[in-house]
Amino acid sequence: MAQLAHADDAALSRVAPRDQKHWFGIAVQRFGQVSALSQFLLGATLGFGMTFWQAALALLLGSIILEVLMCIVGIIGQREALNTALLARWTGFGEVGASLVGLAVGISLIGWFGIQSAISAQSLDVMMPGVMPVWLWSLLFGLLVTAIVAFGFKGMQWLANVTVPLFLILVGWSVISELSKHSFAELLSSPAPGPSISIWAGTGIVAGGLIVGAIITADMTRYNRSGADVVKQTVVGVSLGEFGIGLAGVLLAHAAGSGDIVAIVTSSVGFVGLIIVITGTLKINDWNLYSSSLGLVNFIATTFRKHVNRVHFTIILGVIGSVLAAAGILGKFTDFLVVLSVAFPPIAGIMVAEYFIVKRWRPELDATRASGALPATAPRVVPATLVIWLISAVVGYVVTWGIPSLWSLLLSMLLYVLAGKLGLVRGVGQADTADATATAPIAAH
Image 1 (cartoon, rainbow, N blue to C red):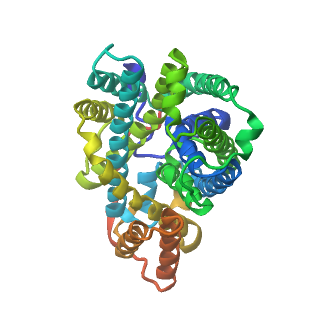
Image 2: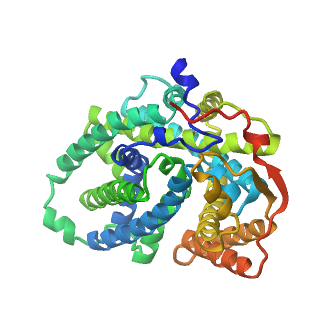
């Protein structure tokens, strides 16, 4: 329990320099976040509708978009040592906007946490029918991840160190086993087995599939020691996870002539498939729960002026998410979560535009960074930001051409810079930071 007491992970403060980590360990976490069964499905979807080289180009372009966004947002998080929801107070959103950012992050990720648990439970039930009910698999998965995330970043690093190498080895073995039955040259030159997907649409699928993870990247990069470390870990983690695992899925789609490659692999390799499901789920779901807890802790702090311990709140969220997954309720909310996801790209666009271009509240961050303190005050509400956020999110939802998430991100940047030039980016009211964070603990030891 003593370790849990120190695992609040600077939910309402800057990460102290002594708690920052070597970039490679965080790169392992990044790889674990972007590589999972969902990445196989993404690669298989591309491979089913594209040739190998078309799919490779779509994966490359989509990965570059994600890496650029992750690096830019990640460098902001690294410089300020702040998580996404807390950072938003001084990067255009003000206290009210940051509260809404935290709420959106919290609801979205706890929803996906439950859905991932339920999907994995169904996969395990297919591979081991009758061992236990699907609802019990869901509950056990959710509670296991909750127990790990309760120990904070250190517990998640331990999980990544174990599951990521195991996941890579087992996936490599299963893919080689399946592909050995086919001519590699023929797979590279074979036509798409399914309905055609354009490279542009494929790039959108790749970029859109991880856009939420890119937006909340500050939750991870606040533990980095330099901007160069952010770039290194992003290139290594995303290239291996997004590009490497995705290409394996493409090849498997051509080998099997089907888009349901995960089912083929996990059913054909028996116990190895079971371990792949478990490791893939654990390593993506811990970040779903972790960032959800950070977002909602910030929402409660800014909305109700009350600090709640991240560890205790994580346990509560994890239990709720696990129970809802076991009850099968969260599956009903998938459409809602997809709609909610359009709210995330403009968050990054506004934060980047404010921090690097408009710089309305950048001096306050600069003045307090060296001391490790937070700015004494934050704007209560920034009306222009809320309007820009809404407009850009609607565009992301309505526009179906190209890469909607990218258009909404770029539009939010353009509108925010324009509003800044016109003098419309102004805070209304002022909030005392100490009111919401006075009881926040010092960064974890």
